Image (cartoon, rainbow over all chains, first blue to last red; front, side, top):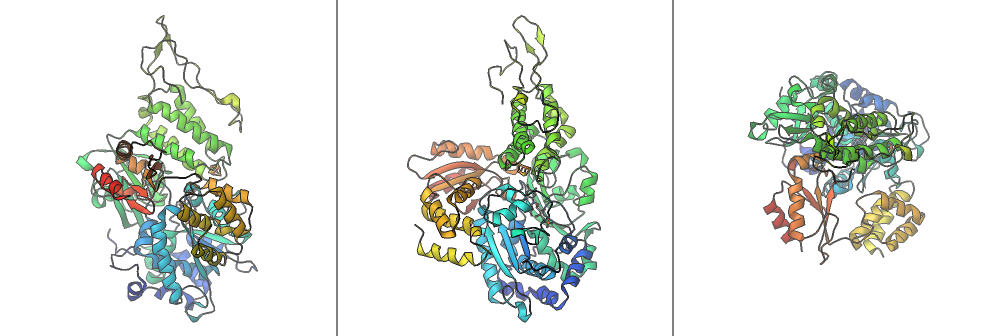
Length: 465
Length: 154
Ligand SMILES: Cc1cc2nc3c(=O)[nH]c(=O)nc-3n(C[C@H](O)[C@H](O)[C@H](O)COP(=O)(O)O)c2cc1C
Ligand code: SF4
Ligand code: FES
């Protein structure tokens, strides 16, 4: 399964507009503008391109949600917030091929009749923002952005908008609030952005890599594009590999590539030839898989769904046999707690609880009841929140408990012994208030740890949580 | 006060949006770049320039983690400790910096040169462990590399 790199071709100096043009750059914009907007959308639709921002939503279909007749401004937001742990692919596009992104965005704007493009880039990427801004200036200077593009009646502006540090701003409605100069709180949906987006106007949000695929589709034609990789999720995909591999990095591969090939053929295998204990296939929000269960699993929406996970951002994190998975999960839980915007009680409180409980496991101070509680908290977050950050926080916990239960059991505190010698089963098992929406009620607060009078086991003096 | 250059940039940016408020992030960035952190004075000034309430600017500053609402050292060292970096021993990097600078996480050295913080994933997981200082990314770190970087930052 080989493929010429289409998104990140190894052409020296491609970041500059002269080299980009010399390699056919902006030819697809020219081609698009000679087509009808609907024909462009149709091409993208038939290509089978699905969003690379995490949810794999069909891109052409999303574009058709934009109203054709409207007296409102229409907007395209290109999502370069890239803050999902384990994800570092969009940065490669900013650095190596920013004009492909700009060309794709202007084509998308043309297809949807959009007059204003905002490219939102996370604040930490200031160096890359400068690279992209330079490319945007070049594109303006040559008439690929701005008024009457390539002498046509079509005009669209292109503005780079710098974020300021908040994972949640990658969520599409939060991103729009952030562009509006608000705090980055997600909005309740519906209404959906295509009806009521930026300033209440029709808006489409697409990931950076998704947009970079658009000129490629026009160049190859939808038919040839749809034959790359997995038929139900075709195209090149930027797979970022990190963790315990010899050769980490971003690899452009056809979808449908075997995870084991990604790890061994491209990322150079595991240092010291150690066994793989686990992988997180698509950024920290996706469900963890056991190392023994990787045979035959492919990097595409269908393959990972069948394996009980998802593609997410294709940020593959590899963990060798010596990895302390409880520590990994505790760190992930801490991340979601830190990044929760606090609007929904299940997410705000639940992420904090999960982190706290996991810290008890990390210190071997948890009880078996803590495991049930942990799962119950995760289950109560999932599906009960305004945005998908809640789910993203629940899935790693749920999947770790399901697939690595023994790791938790190993960390349960040994049976405690009262001075008299009577063994005590961890009583005081935490009680979660039942009946929906009880999160945060003071009655649900629990210590989680039985009171220890004297203990044969270590750690009795430590505070819980 | 904003520099003339920034004032001009803010005016230019306002044309990019249907109303002035979206420029709040960019304006705060400019203030922070000029002053190192965002004081009350900065927020008042941004609010005035954009014609938005002061409390709104304050709300924005407090929401986004990259805005410093208190003074920080000349160099803010942000070590990523999220999963991919953790798997590649970012904790050792944090400890090493703590030991060399004699400062805890969240602290600033007495000479005001460095502030040390732990960061969430910075999009550099393939070159872990890593840290960011100012706009610069320092990747594939080890102790010796950290020493060289720290001594180069005056
Ligand atoms: C908490 C959270 C964070 C997200 N972060 C990003 C991000 O950094 N970049 C991104 O493209 N999409 C992110 N998404 C997904 C976006 O909401 C949206 O689905 C995506 O940008 C759509 O683009 P696509 O259809 O091209 O994939 C995030 C979603 C959630 C719930
Ligand atoms: S799910 Fe979490 S991050 Fe999303 S809106 Fe609710 S509180 Fe905020
Ligand atoms: S986990 Fe450290 S940069 Fe991504």
